[in-house]
Amino acid sequence: MRMTRARKAVLLGVVLLAVGLTGRASAETRLPEAAPPVTASAPTIEPAAPPKATKPKATKPRTKPTTKHPGARKVSNPRFGGPAGSHVLTGTKGVALTFDDGPDPAETPKLLRLLAKHHVKATFCLVGSNAQRHPELVRQIVAGGHTLCNHTWNHSLKLGKNPAPKIRADLQRTNAAILRAAPQAKIKYFRAPGGNFTPRLVAVAQQLKMTSIYWDVDPRDWSHRKGETSAAHQAKVISSVARHCRPGAIVLSHDYAQPDTIKAYKKLIPWLKKRYTLVALP
Image 1: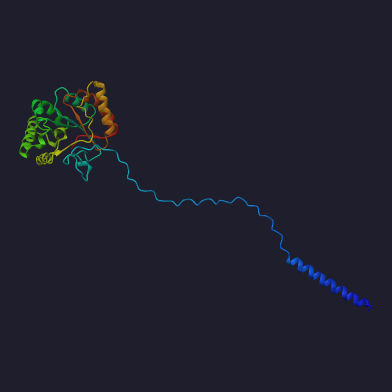
Image 2 (image 1 turned 45 degrees about the horizontal axis):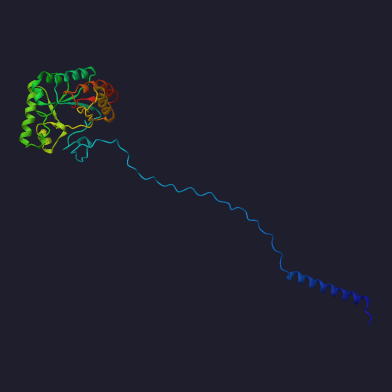
């Protein structure tokens, strides 16, 4: 049976439509092509957050080292830090030069002239027996405006171990010798030889209206090492005082039989005056 031209055209269209649909379905069922490989890049490191600020731990301020005095007790006021509560500081910014064991007929006059030259007042701790032998020197010390201090009758290192009546007799005997030489003198201070204060010794001195004084600076001018030259000894005294002195210090030295001490102070006094106010204990 012969198809008409119109029917042929319709049949051809149907075939073509079917082929197209079959191809589309085939294409949709195929696996997708692999995606192109991703190239790994170096990771970016974010800058670390700054550490959280922390408050520094509080530290105790460093303090200038001080000498630990034998027999010293803990006190709220460092001025009374010597053995049995004796004074180690003046209580002001003034530095007090103190000279022990005199008067000495050879060295005390030299020291008095040196102090007068520089307009410096000091404190003299007098041994009673020496004051009795040299009353004229006691008078010179008083005339120079210096302060007097009782240093026992014969420099007894063990006086503080004695009963109170015996201590009192010794201190009164010493004061009497000083006052015979200079009746108007005031004796406001007491120093135990060797710094060997005991509570009993301090108490008796206080009853006699004397304040017990120790020291803050000790150049050990009385100690001469074997073979030590005069120049070396003077240098030791100068260095020790200069190194340890501070405002308010009580400085221990000796005029009795210590010519190198007097020579050392010829250099020390000008040096100290530039840095401190030198005072006699009031």
